[in-house]
Length: 336
Image (cartoon, rainbow, N blue to C red; front, side, top):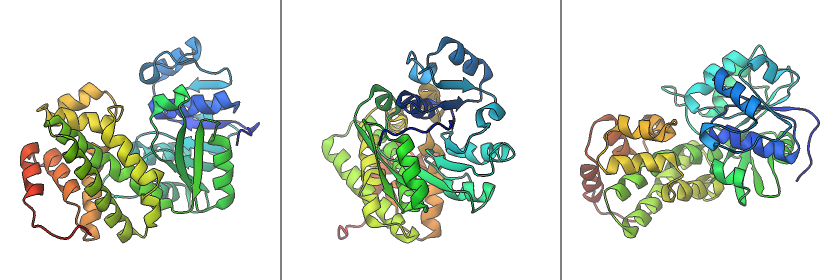
């Protein structure tokens, strides 16, 4: 598990998650290059040898270099890990395509869908780079700060290539970070997408002041909605009951390290959407992806009432308490 490669690995995206993965890789002994868009911040991190802003004060291992120069970051690199927000993946790949090695392999640690197109991340990769480029999807219940702290963590990594999947796991896994392989690419991706929207719902009900009964019911029914859509998309049911589905759903719905949950908490307490986003200071993927998940559900004629009410709150100015009443007033039916 702790074998390391002599070849460099590039991590594109210097937010909390990308930085945490880069630090984890470098601590393990991997030659790691971290790229971010902000030249001033990247230069400051490289000079001071500490992470700034998202993981403030964490020391950077000596074999981790930080840069805002894509060309330098990608020189002689075969394995590239993508950790930018979902709306930025396509444009980043277009910029990187001329710089990628001919034998480039992509690991995606981004959770989300392409705006307006509803494409999954692996579809964005295939559309931008071609079907021949190997890719893998990393997802699961993983908070960046806990990865850096060395807390035991587990995640899923899915790929259609068994060889690349095992290679990527070998590079990423550490004695504290256990990664399980999967061939269910859409299943692993879907859990990471939908849970962000549902975590907003969990935050809203807690912000409204409801209790443990409400939260447990919401998480359980959220899992049902996730599995309904997964079935329509051809996912394996056990995937959504695993780390990238149920595991990530529980994590983001119950802990305030989740920016999606904190966003929902603020809305439930009466704050405006703009105020809530500004207070968090990072991309709230669930806010962006609520419309995309709703569109997927409508496209496949899947009933996702919790997702629908989150959408109504975020995009149709519905009051959170009215959304709760809408859910409670639905016709009584069987559980499954």
